[in-house]
Amino acid sequence: MPPAELRLPIETERLRLRDFRLEDAQDVHAYGSDPEVTRYMPWGPNTPEETAAFIARALEQQATWPRLDVGLAIEHRTLGVVVGSIALHLRDIPHRTLEMGYCLRQDLWGQGIVTEAGQALLRLGFEELGLHRITATCDVRNTGSYRVMEKLGLRREGEMRQDRQVRGVWRDTYLYAILAEAWSRPIN
Image (cartoon, rainbow, N blue to C red; front, side, top):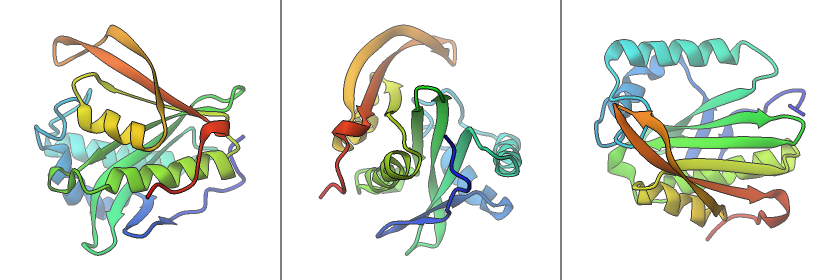
């Protein structure tokens, strides 16, 4: 199912989705160390060492093919810096199912950045990778995240009760998904 090559970067009106680079560490640490950004994530807030390890893992993944996990930097084209990340995780190759995840710097919340990046990845997944289903999850308290999923056309399929422990606390998770047949083009 993975294509012969992944054509990067992916350009949108405001964004460039691309592989991470070693020099992105400072930008990544700026959002990855923010307690508010990482509040509902299973990781963080990151130390400088954890950010360096993340960048090292990303560079290592880029050297393999096919890549079952594709973590992309969200570079804001006007600002010229990495402001977040968006990832694709192939979870079920025979059934052509991928999981999507994302993270964004706090000062850019509510501006449609993740929706724009997500739309580009849905297009990639359905048009280029020939996926059948794309899923995403979030902590049930993360209204910003599930609103992005709903804007992208994903439908809430369920709530998983106390499915994971994050920083010593059990959390509930919403599961969202969209099928290829329900996917539509850009959101305006």
